[in-house]
Each structure stands twice: as C-alpha cells, then as structure tokens.
Length: 119
Image (cartoon, rainbow, N blue to C red; front, side, top):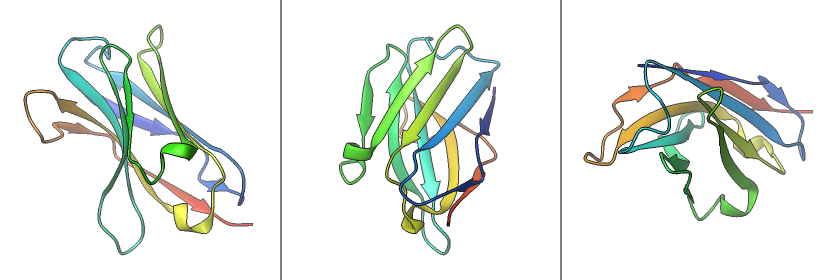
C-alpha cells in the first residue's frame, strides 16, 4: 500500500490549501478503514486534522472543523483536504495515512508534504 500527497508547497495567508492523497495497492472504498489527514507543525507533535471512512463519512478535529473539508474521488482512488483561511500557524508537514478500524494505529503513511503559509 502506498500513499502520496500532492499540492502546493507555498500558500498565501487567507487562501485555501488543497491537497490530494493518491492511494495505490488498496482501494479507499474497502470496508474497514479510515483515510486521514495529519499534520506536524515545526517543533511540535502530530495533529490529527480529520478522516473520511470507506463509506464516505467524514470526521474533523473540533479546532479545525469550521475550516476543513475532506472529500474523495473514488474513480481516481484519491482523497483530498481543503483547509480555508490559512494563516502562518498552519505551516506544517501534512501527511495522509490509513487507519484500520480494528486498530488505533495508522498502518500506512505518505511521505508528507511541507506547506508553508507566507506572503
């Protein structure tokens, strides 16, 4: 299973970040998995942003919920993240990952993509 993030490395303040996670070796509609976005700001720990399930339900961390949208394109086996009203505090490495419902750990991760918010 491989996950690969793609998207812009630089975003201006107030803009919307759009990232795509392309999945190979597994199908995002297969029963039993959450597909998640996680980020790590510089010098800080991992922060879960949100997830989309195999059936298309979405869940978001409360602090970001008003600015976050996760969707999927099943024809391309991809899921996406949109984070609006970006500020420099959103600068981070953004990861996509898979989480089995039967386990609280992520079993596959993308390599991560650096996103910097700056004018």
